[in-house]
Amino acid sequence: MSSQRFRAAVIGGSGYGAAELIRRLLAHPHVELARVASIDFVGEPLWAVHPTLEGHTDLRFESLAPGVAAQGMDVVFLGLPHFVSAEAVPSILAAGARIVDMSGDFRLRDLATYEKYYGGKHPCPDVFTSGRFVYGLPELNRAALRETRCVASPGCFATAIELALLPLAKAGWLRGGIEIVGVTGSSGSGAAPSATTHHAVRANNLRTYKPLTHQHVPEIVQTLTEAGGKDVDLRFVPVSAPLVRGIFATCFAHVDASVPSGAIESRWAETYAGERFVRVPKKRLPEVAVVKGTNFAEVGVAVGEAEGSSRTVACFAALDNVIKGGAGQAIQSMNLMLGLPEHLTLEDPGAWP
Image 1 (cartoon, rainbow, N blue to C red):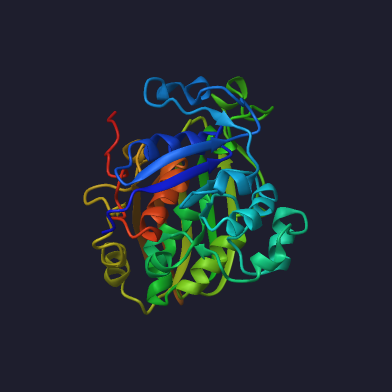
Image 2: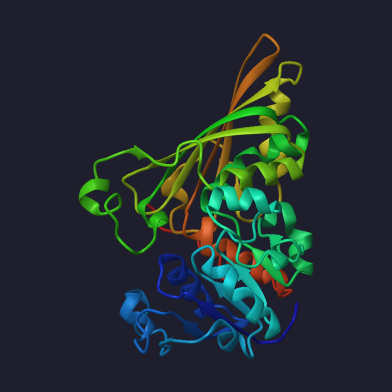
């Protein structure tokens, strides 16, 4: 392990994901959070926006161009919206800093697919097509993350769904149509309130949004295909729920009836044996309350009887969308990229109940 003290900056520091990044970077034994840039709250202390940080840091929000913010930094986290994030990348690369991008701007490999799902031309197509960014799912791409200088951190829904289905993909048993319902908490909508996210509408309500068209769909298809899935056809319906944090994904796959149910059931424990942050509960199925506030994900499976040529397999995943689905996973990737132990600042078990 390196004994070097690394310096980090966060650009786009006023959101919920940034709050979690900042909190964990401040506690990191080998990384110093040196600056936080934002177009909002300039000159204000970080704790004026993220009140749990009061007494833990004297840093203030600064108005800095990305290239300036990156000067002298070993790693820069981008907590910016898509399109805006991509525009910041060239100047950060020119400054020589590593990048962990939390937007969707560099997760995909196909430019036309990006433009279809994100609704516009990519601001930095030369970097997009260069292959410099590694998709930051450590459970799949750990070796590549240790070698890269640019990480495209996965989306929150994508992380949950990929972790739920990777055991089937890696076994070569995932093919054809997959139906998914994913339930998410309000923090996934960001810090700025809207007509569909404020408490009066959200607290006693369930509603869908972007059914079958969510921007994480091609990211999930790409990842599962690269892991061994064949002809993956994803139908995903996201649901907004009266939670602050958490994602619960239920995924229905259809496996060839010739595959024994016992072999299917054992795949999750086999796939994630030795993984620090993905667990298969021994006496229950995944629950959001158990992983809320942590970087842990839980996965599980229920296998149906064979009907004709296939059997239905219901795959489940639960995680905290802000941590394992966001900032925590970004720090996991940073640790790997810097040659540090992957678990640093991420192993706290959370509170119960």
